[in-house]
Image: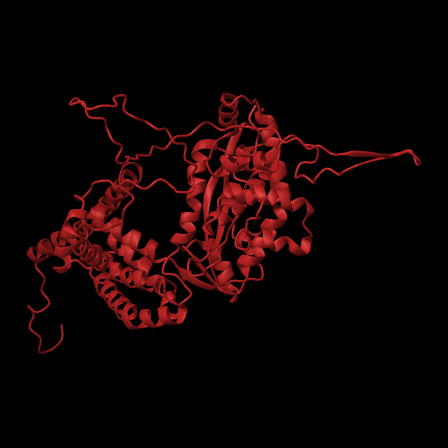
Length: 526
């Protein structure tokens, strides 16, 4: 023992040890309890998210009352609501309709009208005076007849030379299917019904039989396959057009592919590449692939050096690592994670973050119709301060949350990807989210509920070609049936250098392109 020290200074009694041991045990138990509680909350969150995905609404909007609790005022969609209220107040009171009452749309003026005249049987009033016609009341109903088929007869004159003993006839117009029965209009009908209306061929076979024509589904399957092959050059030209843009959307969705010889299906993917809504001439390209590997977007986007708007899937990381492609991530994905944490886990922190993101979308609604320079200026003035405030808020709140917390994971996603999430603030051509690509995926999501699986790799590739042209035609405001009919008529005789004029964003209907109504009207009555 050292000199000058109190002998009782280093003395520890058994009583003190009895206190220290339970306290240490208590700390360990408290830590285990917090971890288990966070784990339970995470599992409950996953169960609630699956239930919402299966049974709940897909809307991600907060209730007005909840927003008022969060910030004592409604921050989302107020501009649109105020404008709608102002427009309603400016209307005459007699013209206002009760909220929720449906408004009947006027029937299209382009439809043919068949008039039925109705007159009263009585010619005299009860008093004996003759009725005098003072006008008429007109009401309209919409009617239809099932699909009507007609036969195109190609009559070619034959001429003979008495001297040379030769015979010549007018050539048959070139066809997509040489010597085939289907004309361009029928091919367009079958293709659009299968890939846009999502009607499997066996359903089409039944529908056409009711109209008096039997077309075997095997024949229609062969027609669709040939159309996919003939349209492939147009899809290649569409890809080149998309790659010339500085900003492109990309996304992918799974489909079932029949595994040869096994009688089972395996997972394949359809990749979607789309121009933004900020450009006037729009296009979308579908690419069928057997997997979700990153080699597929690298193959399609070879030569692209702009900004790619995607989610945070790792398959795109190799493109960004090369330095040629700039990454812009989807703000809607970050919002969705925060919204789920608020909706399913009652997180007030996540709810306030969602409300701040709603303010960013308010600015985007105003910037939608602006030119890129004006859009960039508006974002810098109004969106940048909100984004900086959101980043500071998330950083501060993250320090108060455990790593296993659901809200912490949602915040970590935003903070770790913040530079790519806010890339749109520095470029007026970049959209805030990837919703345009997700909307382009929806036809596939609807279609796979009907056709269930893809029969082969080749069939998937051909279907991707056809869907690329159909969806691109719709993006540019064209009727897909009229577009494909005209393409099928002109493509066999079109030179390679003129192929671009048949792309949906360049296409103009020919003057002699007949609609089903005009075509039937040209058929002489029996």
